[in-house]
Amino acid sequence: MSDEKVVSLGAKKKSLTEEKHQQEDNTNQDLVYCSFCGRPNTQVIKMVKGPGVNICSECAMIAVQYLILQDRMPSAEAQHILDAFWGKVR
Image: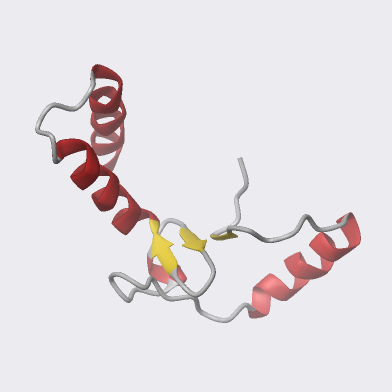
């Protein structure tokens, strides 16, 4: 898994040279803000950057929980994932 703080969706694959230049540029990286909560990438665990929108890992988890719990009966597998996530956060 990548250690990048901001992950872009839909971006083209980069060559090794491009990746090296991007790593050098990451030290001067602009802030990326979550489109839902407004926090910058420096205040969240991860940020997913999409075409015109961004979502932080915390807002993504809230959205996933809402979608799963909307039916009030999460599957056993979904509940296991939620328990594992919330067990690590606490």
